[in-house]
Structures are given as C-alpha cells and as structure tokens.
Length: 118
Image (cartoon, rainbow, N blue to C red; front, side, top):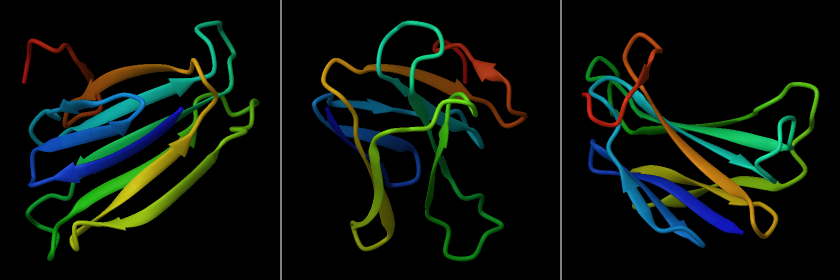
C-alpha cells in the first residue's frame, strides 16, 4: 500500500494513494496516522505525525515526522520525505498490502481529541 501524507494550507492533512481522505487537526494540535501491517497486537507499524508550525515560527509550514509504533519492532517499510507544493514536504510510506490505518487527533497538550471536538 502506498500512501502520501501532506499538509495543505494551514488546516488540512491530505492522504493520497491507496487511501484518499482529508483530516483537520485540532487548533494547535496534530494528526497521527498509525499504519500497521495487521490489526494484531505488536504488529510492525509506523506512526506519522502531521502538525502545522505555530505562528511564532518564522516561515511556518507543515511538520511531518515518522516513528515506530513499538520500539522493539523495526519498521520494515520504505519511508521518505519529498518536496511538495513549494512550501511543504510530503511523507511517503510504502507498507504491505492490507495494512491498517488508524487516525488519531492530538490536542495542544498532547491529549487525544475525539472526532466531535476541536
């Protein structure tokens, strides 16, 4: 499964590829996409974090990061950052067919925000 994750404007995270969707992070928060090989516990996986830099950062743009979901299980897939839109990078993930994607909205203080809240 191929996914491209990128930020657009200052308020939307787009996912393109085998999954097409748009997500709105909470104000001053982030979106985390947890991509796992299966829905079983301790499955190899990667967490992609996307947040827009605060106004206090000159030349603010989207920040994208990737980390293993479990520190004891290496991420066996290709992950790369590539130029996108002249103002932000896009993060590309090559995961196995049938991989699972879970979206988590993270508030300013790091707390998980339910979809119905801002």
